[in-house]
Structures are given as C-alpha cells and as structure tokens.
Length: 168
Image 1 (tube, rainbow, N blue to C red):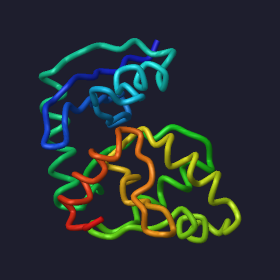
Image 2 (spheres, rainbow, N blue to C red; image 1 turned 135 degrees about the vertical axis):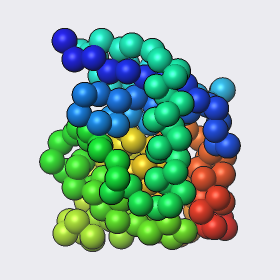
Image 3 (cartoon, one colour; image 1 turned 180 degrees about the vertical axis):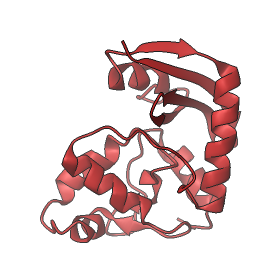
Image 4 (cartoon, rainbow, N blue to C red; image 1 turned 90 degrees about the vertical axis):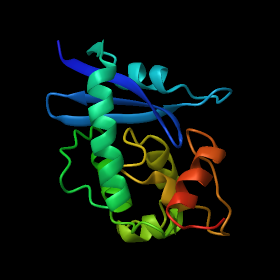
C-alpha cells in the first residue's frame, strides 16, 4: 500500500495541509473554517487507497519549500507527483505556465491547450487541481474579470492573488 506523509502548517493564507508521496509533492490545500471543502477530507478522497501518515515536522519542511518556490515563481526545483487524466494534466501544465501576478480566463486556458470549446471541462479540471498554490489554479478568473470560484474560498483566492500583485 502506498504511503503518503501529510501534515499541517499555518501560513499567511490560513492553515495549509500538504502531502508528499515517494514520488514527490502530491497535495496542497487549506483548512478553511466554514468552507464547503475541507483539505483533509479532500486529501483522503484524492488518495483513497493510500496509507496516510501525519507528520507536522515533515509538513513544516514541505510547506517552507513550497512557499519559497511559489514566492520565487520557480517550481522547477520541486518534484511533483501530479495524478489525473491526460486532460487534467494538460490543463494543470497550462496553469503552471501562467506568470505570477497575472491571470487568465477559463477560455484562455482552453485556447492554450488547443481545445477552445472546452472551457467548462477546463473549469472542472482547474477545480480538481490537487496542488493548490504550486499549480496556480488561483490565477484563473472568469472572462468578465470576476474572481470566480476557488476550492478554498474566495477570500483565500483574493489573499493569494493580492500577494502576487493582482488587484481584483
């Protein structure tokens, strides 16, 4: 059985939950009180067949590395264990290409991946991103400039975008 080590770390965006498999960083979410999504439950749902082992010590190190990579806008030094369909991975890779401090619409992403009529499917894939912050799904907004949804709540999305210099 696969083992995944996870833990919690308080950040400027709230309580982060972060996890690592033997293949790399595999999950990053948030514990947002009152939010319809719970980071720990999402982790359990994402890795149903894995043995989850909690280590806040490992999480502290992982979160420092992840936050430093996000701040520098250079994730090339991170080993990511992204799991999903080919379409999801195509969308997530397009998200990685969005420069820090900028945003794109779901339509833009659909066009970037060569599937201009798939903005709804793109939206679904964006919402299923298991590595928030690192795979910057927060940089995707609605075509009309509205902030749109975010698994961890609009306030967390606003905080992250604000830290990146995006004013919404």
